[in-house]
Length: 488
Picture 1 (tube, rainbow, N blue to C red):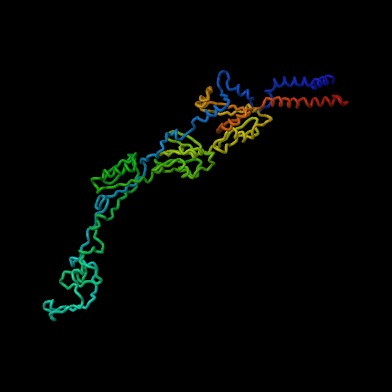
Picture 2: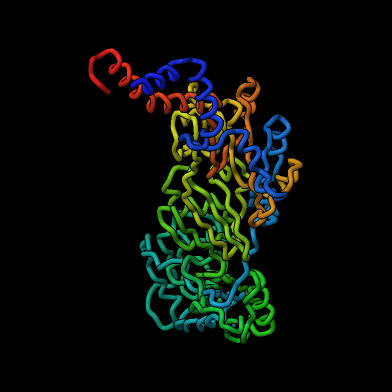
């Protein structure tokens, strides 16, 4: 009992208690629970045994300006886009339609004009209109007909038209006696007035129907040519439709009557692009001669099925692949380049997230919900730094940077940098008010890791709590034993 009381007296002395706590804290802090390394431990862990594991960069305005000028992935730069639509060429397997016209009938590709219809016997000059009934009562003159009885002379009751009346306008049809050479019934000679009836085929042969001949659709053969009657095998692959037209016309120039050709590409798999991925309807789309830009093709496929800030457009062309956010494609017209035949456009949904650990209000993988967010926005999404735990001088952001960016920051490349990417730990000192302005300009990227270290006093607090949980019940029990008659 005396020994126990002696032990209690020692524990109750403040000086001894403080000494014991300091000794235990120095030797036993590694055994205390913690969310991660201290700020000093992270700074010291960057290099080990002469090897660079990662670079620790103190973020200031110079670092922000250096990161801003680093080149980003660009369709315009990667594919050397000239700003002009591609010239579409005919390829093997394309389906072509060929139509040929000639300047007159009777050529190679149209029928000869029909022969004129035979004319009926009768007067040399056809009347302009059918004979009209006589409007006057006329008594024949018997003396004019040999051998016929009757008076020697007899004047008709109606007037006899003169030459002027035949040419001039008149409401009455002229009447001509037999034997005058005028048409029966008093019609006007056809030589003076254009006939109202249809002309013969000979008359319309020069201006008649000159319909062209359209050949059946045919595919460009493996030899790259198509067959055209009287022209033979005409090379088509690697040419434009206009060039094929000129080749056909040149081959038919001495055989047909001023031939004119028209070549239309009815179907072409070679001059098409593939749009796939997170679109409403993935499909192959044939390019138009005027050119199609990337956004037009994505719209033709029905558009993206996910929010814009989660969508990336991946373009594969001639063995080169690049990927940029859809929001940048919309915001920067220079990135909305013309598609080329054979392009593969893949719309990819990639939820942008960053991960937060340490002394913050929320430790989790958090989505961007926008194309770009800053470090200040990221910390706000994680409910900020905890004032009872966080070390404001120990806020770190870990990521892999291209070797060119590391060199621009005057930092050494990590010894084992994978694929030209070197790890960096950016450090922020939020005890300085200027750091909040810097954090608002620092961009957070997909899969970044943000870590907020604990303050140094947190470890002492944890140690006292641990000691209190161990010694508290012992001291309480001994005090109860002393003040009671119960033997301990």
